Length: 264
Image 1 (cartoon, rainbow, N blue to C red):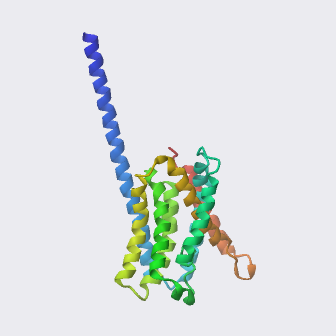
Image 2: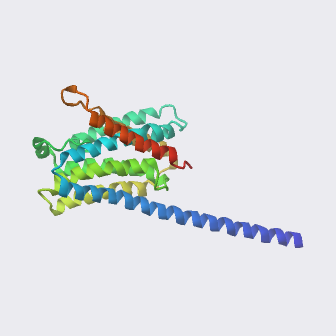
Image 3: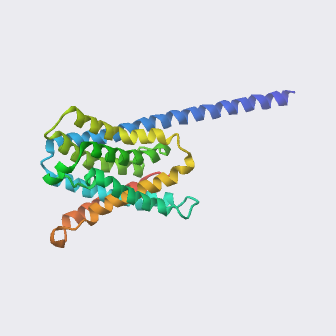
């Protein structure tokens, strides 16, 4: 009888410890999710204000884009694709191609905002704010879905999005606020800032087995954007040493993050 009582007390203590640990883990995960949302929104706000006040410096936006492209393509090959190909589906590569094709469709709406094709005045006139809003929202929303399974603020995938948000937001701020600066412009910016966090929230309600497919889709989007920026022809096809240096710097930053990031 005493032994049974002792076992019951011991089992009860174990359950309490497990509940405590589970509660602590949930609290830490919830806190990390909040930090991720703050980082995503801040990256857009900082980029927009830089674009509003320093938008005349197109070289700054271009250099930031090239740096982020080096970072993004490295995140693709060192983080996203290896995780995608761990899935038990030998046809999953089709989803990466799907991401590339989807980005091509989205660019018909955004006119290449994602890789800096904003600075030509005849192109600015052809960009419809509603089309831009739709294209940018879908792009950012899809990026946010895989974040539902990430609770680490140093995640290379998260930092890839944050790093890419800065130059895009810079361009957005330049295009929307430099001359217009109206409520509708701020609405587009707010929608873009909230798109990835919304994707992350909705991602919690999707079947976890779908994660590799969303990741593959986003990987295709990342691959298209970064490769267009990196491999875009230089003037007269001459070697652009500054561009090469910026790409290597972006790759180096991503590799450092990859090597020192704690994989759980």
